[in-house]
Structures are given as structure tokens and as C-alpha cells.
Image 1 (tube, rainbow, N blue to C red):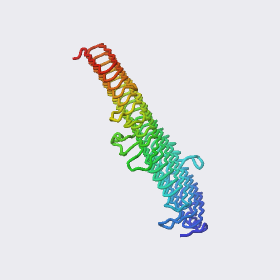
Image 2: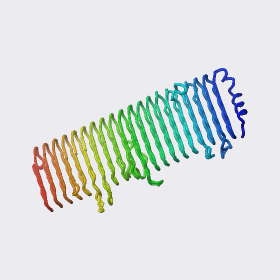
Image 3: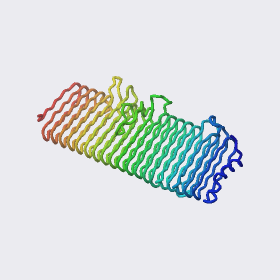
Image 4: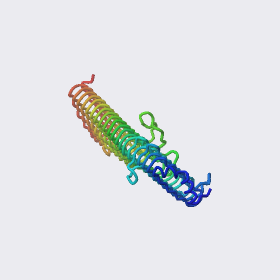
Length: 523
């Protein structure tokens, strides 16, 4: 199929001349080369369309280089389509649209599989040059874009920029005022889906590499989402419901393509004014990715980053530049805070907080060694509970790993732990109010074990271990109990059982193979 500029312009003019003259519409079409098709229909008033086609490459299937279809009904619409190579574009700004703008640029000069773009816009814009509407810029081959901005939108803005091959982007903004979506894709086989409903939502996605997938869904008003990912199979899911939410994901996966390796991050926030920030630059970031189950948590034990927050003003900040990463966070209630930094080898961290004003701060910096894995598991229910952990130990060839387990029920309980030995373990359980546990497992304390179980109110337990293969166990039932254990040596054992009110014990062990048991007022 071959058209000259004159012939193409004449066909379109015959189709739309009468309505264009009667309703002050304007259409300009320029076609160069072979196999170009343009169809324009403007039954509204004050609409302007411009189509430029350069048919450098002929489509392999239908022998068409470029196809552009523009339909504008409504008033004051502006649509521009510029096509080079093998491309398909459809723009429909619908009957109720006022002042909507669409600018679409497609370049596929190499003659590969067609780029495809479909734009549908209802709603109200601020006219040409206002920075509202839809902008699509496609380079490469086989790119696909669908933008729908809905009849209820006002001054919505969607920007999609694609370069590379086999990229796909879908943007839907439904209703509201001043929502903004930007999608930038460079690489191959990338996917991005953005859905926004309400006023003032902002979504920014940047993808590079291959086989990446981003899904963003924001409801209500004034939520912000920013996702940046590079490398192969980087994966992100953001779902925010409520007002004033913030989600930031920045992740890279430097490994070459591997069917069993993916990066990943999942943020699910309900309520209002919640904030989550995930930064992953490890080698794996996520392995054997599975879809989230109900509640948004991922179901296998491979490393990942995942945040689920329900309530108001919760905060999660996750930074994982290590190798195999981890973390699984769920916060329910209000004003709960999590800060986690993982820079080690095979780190895993799970946190659950239910209540108000709870806090977890975890730093993991395991050094390289055989089986160098750090692990933390924290579960807090109540108000104003806190955990502070600095974990820099390393695993040992026998398979033991630095590990902290915390279980707290009640209010105002606190755990303060430092683990820098090889293969050390601390298990802390506190049930009641205003209990405090302090654990120090220092660099020389290889394969030490500390267990603290406090039930009641205002109990205090402190354990310091400086040598290898020591064991300290504290069990306090009652109120106002105090226990202090210091172990400086090796293969020492200290056991404290206290069950009264105001019981106090102090144990200091130096040397080897010492054994102390304290039992006071045990029921």
C-alpha cells in the first residue's frame, strides 16, 4: 500500500472537512514513504490533531509501516502523533474531554516488530502546553503502552518513555485531580502497571535491565510511590490504600539472567500517612519468588524484602546492600517504627509489631566466612515496646549462625542486644510491662547461648559473655527482679530462677567450666 502526501491528506480531508469547518477543528497530516495510514475524526470543537508519518520500514505482517487513528470528541483537545518505522498508535480523547493533550512519538527505524500505543483520555486538562495529559515516547521494537485517565480526572499527567525491546507499560488514573505517573523503561522484556485513584497521587517507576516487573496501585489521595530497579528480574509490588502514603523501592540485581534468581520487594500499606523505604543492592535480593498471599507476605523462606503496614503513621526503612538479603516486616497499629540495615552475606530478618509506638532498630553486618548467616526474628504485641540490635557476628563451618529471637507481650518492654561473636544465639521472651533485657555477646564469645525469660513487671536482666561456649539462662517470674551475669572464660554455665518480688542475683564467672545455679522464691 502506497500513499503520497497529497493523496493521504485528500482522503482525510474528505472524511472530516465538513465537521472540521463547522466546529473549528484543525487537522494536519504529513506522510512520507510507503505504507502509512492515518485516520482522524474530530466531531467536537476546537480540537487540533497533527500526524507525521515516515514509512521507512514495512510491517512484516500487514505491509503497513505506520498506522495512526485519532478520535477527538469534546472541546479544546490536542493530539500529536509522530511515527518513524513500523508503529501503531490509537488516540481517543472521548466525548466529555475538555482541554486534554496527547503527544505520542514512535521510532522503529530498524523495521522490527511494531511499537503499539493506545491513549484514551476523558476528564479535564488545562490546554496545550500546560504540562497535563499524556506523553508517550517509544524507541526500539515491540513496545506496548496503554494509558487511560478516566472521566473523573482533572489535570492528570502520564509520561511513558520506552527504549529497548519488548517493553510494556499500562497506566490508569481513574479519577481525582493532579495525579502524576511517570514510567521510564530501558532494556528488554520489562513490565510496569500503574493504577491511581483519588487526588494528588504521584507514581514514578524507572526500569532497566531485563525481565523486570513493577505493579503499583494507589487509592485515596496524596500518596507517593517511587520504584527504581536495574539488573535482571528485579521485581516490585506496591499497594497503598488510604491517604498520604509513601513507598520507595530502589533495587538492583547484578547477576545475569537465571530462572531461579530474582530481586523482589513488596510494600502493602493501609490506613494513612504510612511510610516504607526499601533499598536492595545485593546479589540475590530475592530467590525463587512467589506471589504474596493474603496480607501481602511472601510464602517461602528465600531472601526477600517485604513490608505490610496497617494503621496510621507507621514507618519502615530497610537498607540491604548484602548478598542474599532478607527481611519480612508486618506492622499493625499506629506510629510503629522499623529501621534495618543489613550488609552481610546471608542475612534474614523478620519483624512483627502490633500495637502503637513500638520500635525495632536492627543492624546486621556479618563478615565473610563459611556459612556466614545472620538471623533475627522479632514479635512484639503491645505499646511502646522496643528492640535495639547490633549484630556483626559470622557463622562457623559447623553451621551455627548469629541469631536473636525476641518475643514481647505487654507495654514498655525493651531489648538491647549486641552480638559480635561467631555462632552466638540469644533468645529473649518478656511478658508483662516495663521489663528490660540487655545482652552482650562480644567478639570472643563463639558459640555462646543466652536465654532470658521474664514474666511480670519491672524486671531487669543483663548478660555479658566474653569467652567461647558459655551458657546463660535467666527465668524471672514476678516483679522488680534483677539478674546480672558476666561470663569471661569458656564453657561456663549460669542458671538463674527467680519468682518473687524484688529478687536480686549477680553472677561473675572467670576461667573454664564453672557452673552456677541460683534459685530464689521459685513457685
